[in-house]
Length: 289
Image (cartoon, rainbow, N blue to C red):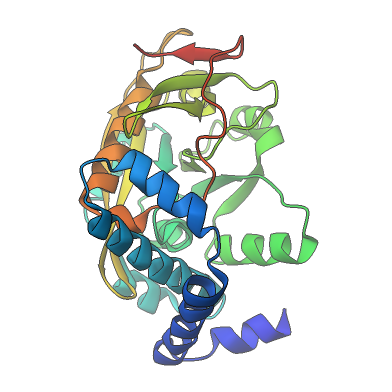
C-alpha cells in the first residue's frame, strides 16, 4: 500500500507519462485481451469501418491505462481537485427526490472513470452515498478499492448483504450506487435478458429488485470524457415508483441509456470485459421482446 500512496502523491503529468508507458506495453507489446476487445467492438458497433474499429480499440486502451493511474490517484487527490476534474452537471435532479424524503438508486456503468464518478458523488451529490460492491479474492486490491471509494464518506455495502442493509438503513435518505452492466455470471440470481448493442444480453435483475424493495426512483449516471483527466456526469431518470414484482423497465431503460452513451463515446466503455459469454435463456432469466 505504501507504494500506491507514494504514486498517488505524484502530479498528474507524471502519472500520465506512466500511463503512456502502460499503454505501449499492454497494447503494442502484450496485446492484453486484444482479441476479445476487437471482437466485442466489431460485434457491437457494426456500423463502423475496420479502420474506425481499430481507432476505437486504440483509444480504449489509452483510456484503460489512464483509468489505472487515475484510480491510484484517488487515495491522494483533494476534494477540490476531484470536483474540478469530474463535474456533476445536474445534481438537482437527485435533489428533487431527496428533498421530498426519497432515497434514490444510482446506476452507473463501466464507463471511464467510474471510480472517480462514485467518489466525486459522495462530495457533489445532495445526499450521502452508499455503494454496492462485490469483494474480490485479492485482499490487498480489495482493501485498496474500499479505501479509495469510501475516502470522502461513501458507505460500503457488500452485495450479499444488500437486502438487509436496504431495510436496516431505510430511514436514511441517500443515494444507493451500483455498477449495473457487469456480466451476471452463472449463479442462482435472477437475471434479465434484453437487446443491447444489437445482441441478446443478460443483466442483473437486482437493480430492478432494489428499486422495487424500497420503491425508489432510479437515476443513471452518464459519464462523458471531456479531455484527459476531465469528465462530466449527467443524471438521467430511468425509473420511478410505483413498481410491481414483474416490472423490468428500469433495466430496459438503463440498457437503452447506456447504449446511447456508448454510441456517443465508444472508447469510454470497458470492452475488455467478457460481456457476452452466455446468451441463451434459462429459468433464472426474464426477457424483453
